[in-house]
Image 1 (cartoon, rainbow, N blue to C red):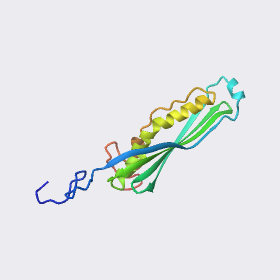
Image 2 (cartoon, helix red, strand yellow):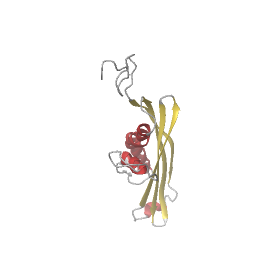
Image 3 (cartoon, helix red, strand yellow):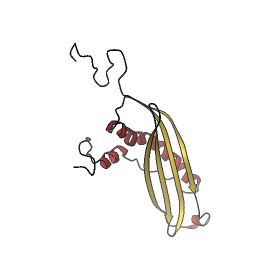
Image 4 (cartoon, rainbow, N blue to C red):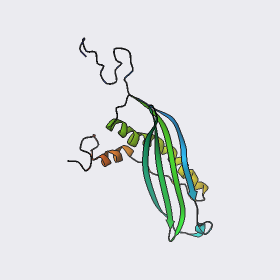
Length: 169
């Protein structure tokens, strides 16, 4: 930076000492909504067929205060054994994130829809596995998910973040 420059580089303190570095912190995490259904108990325990498992994910985010965002990871699981429903789990696991000096747009969206769910996922996975186990089934251990890759794919970008959003030319 030249001697007469008065504008700080991104992330460097400004001349007046103001902190311009991006900062992100997980303030709190919690189960926002949860349901476990075992509609065919006890008959389902007699079924010798391993259930087919369908897992669906959804991620939502919203600003709840200045510099505070809530990210909700919604996981829906349906297990079907032959013609019977073995179990249904709906989990909304949320986190409050303090976010400062992160520019609106791609950077903020990338964090809220890619990195934040990655941080929440191991805890949501444990809640889900415990619930399925407590429902009388073997614990359901979901494989790790590349939320950042999914975010980039939905935005129509490659792994380096290069490309145009899907649907635009």
